[in-house]
Length: 168
Image (tube, rainbow, N blue to C red):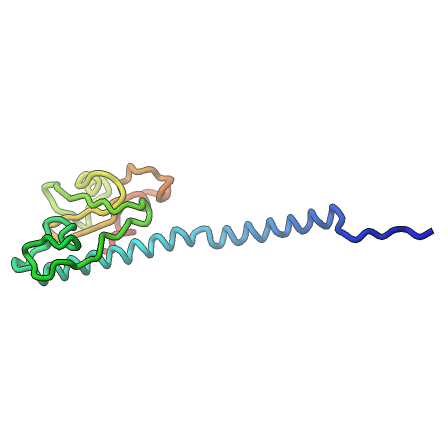
């Protein structure tokens, strides 16, 4: 009598393939998991450079040789102090918080690269978007140390908008 031979895979073979695929998926996720964060950081740095270059172009074209009083003057065409009315097409969006909000620094002292995290947090309000000090023409990513850590990360240098993102 002939035995019937069934074409197919055994349960053990299928389990081995599934385990191998799981290991490969874990390696790929571990390898590229930080790519999103690195991409956001690169986008943020590029946005900061663009805004800062536009601020310098505004100042160079300004009749009073001053920075704009608000960042809106870079793109809305309402600035009276310059001949060329637009220096940016629009405000870039903060890639971490997905905001384009601009917070004005109204503290007695302007933004300074040597400020501690608490000093920076005390000079502006809100979280996400940009912080702008028209007195010195400084713009920074606006990350307070009290903002939700799940958005940016858990270490203090990630949740403040300090040297990591400032590019002074």
